[in-house]
Image 1: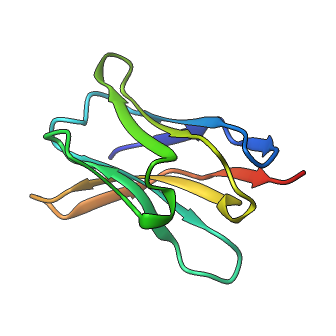
Image 2: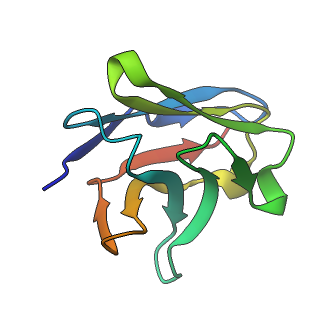
Length: 117
């Protein structure tokens, strides 16, 4: 069982920055691919950024050049640095861990990000 705990959400003005953190219950990044998703009420949960065990990253087009996903193995933490935030980035952000060998996946509880003036 993998537990993921997100933090770092909050209220920020357009153009501002936030850094989300996802603390994992142990050293899982050598066996799990990690990702950040976001969801607004009434819509599906969509992937925002991902990072593989090998360190390859991918981003949805709307955040390319503004968001950066990274891993700190020593702290068992995945980060999402969000810059130049827009009102349309407002959502609940979720951390996700996937083991492609076992097909097991886990979600965090989510953290709210609100971009508003």
